[in-house]
Length: 314
Ligand code: NCD
Image (cartoon, rainbow, N blue to C red; front, side, top):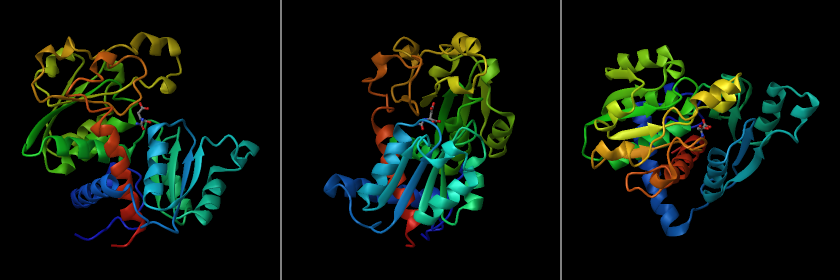
């Protein structure tokens, strides 16, 4: 299949087609073997990735860096912009132009929605959105889809419950939009307290793709009917009133008791970090828990696949 991702920006799940997903997943499978056999190779030698993180990150930052290094590329790793001229008042646009003249690809995380899109307009090289405020986080969605597709080979229909802060969680925004493109028939449950509901435009989009959606605040009502329980953290940094956050941060706690009536093949996913006990520690080694295993590992392989496809014509 043709690589139509070459030199393209990745700002939103809207930028990824079903065909793109097939190509990315195939590439990821090739790279899983490569990493297992040799750790990596030099296919991106001579290419440089600038990771520009205006917001904290553990996994997204380090997995993009590792992905580039495993493919032989170089890096400009800025996890936090405190020691750059942003501190002196240099504009976002100028900063992006500077790095786009040094690097072949920019990975940008920013607290404000839309900034990676602005970066893409200004930059002369491809830009990957690594999370923009309460907007999107498309590379996370690609590896979440890959994790789900790989786990449920042979199934054509799945019930996926997205749980927690669906209003502010950018991972679930991107995931809800991308999952219908996997070719699986998805039934969604959007499980949140009333004040943290999924934005109506995303619910509307998903319905327009013929995915039935049930919106509820009752976690127990969906547990027994879900193949995927995708739990999210209440996004503290998006609350202006921290008292409100404290009241709602433990609205859901997924533990072994909650899972009593789950099906044998139900999996628990979380983009991480687990920050307020929304999944209890006793689930870390539960057989269906993927968040510290396959889901996490796939973050590296999918980011390797994305960089390879974006940076090399093939
Ligand atoms: C997520 C994010 O930054 O949106 N983290 C990540 O990249 N895995 C989820 C979160 O912070 O809750």
